[in-house]
Image (cartoon, rainbow, N blue to C red; front, side, top):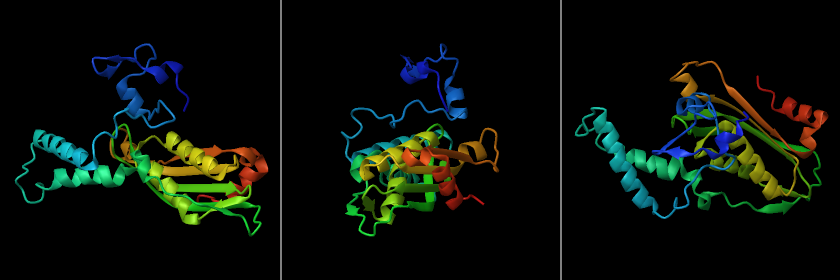
Length: 238
């Protein structure tokens, strides 16, 4: 999805984005699933706090949200929820915000002299929409053509998981996975396709439970029609 260039440098007014010149409102950005940058938007001080400090702050603020909604946090079922949510955010579903959690990847010589594409398909993908903080659930399909180096198969899954574990838009996620693989494998011959259901579409707003979103990245030889077609035949979504 291409954006008006004015969206890439949005001025702030009273803590909210002033979007009148672009014609987009905050609500439109969320409902149309617009992303404004290739990199995940992060503050410079994002990692000054320890994980324990972050969990304590999130638990306190989430408790405020629950109490504002009128929930009784003295109930046995609810009293531990703020701490559980804080742990889930920091250690699990948003752990990919911290590049210290990026999987360690070792390269190996392509001793088998396998020169065709390698495809890892149907990689389970769980992420969260950065506009509403609700799940994105789907599958990722990744391929590369070795230029003399290979990586362990499970590392492809781990790379997908790392970039999925952060607030995301699917277009950015697709490109982040591809760029990481290009850098690691030192090749442009990379392909990534993601097919996912967005609960911000299914559980709210339009409430469409049937549609999915497909995004793709094709680099190097995968831009050639024959190579792209071979890859798509391998991952044929049926």
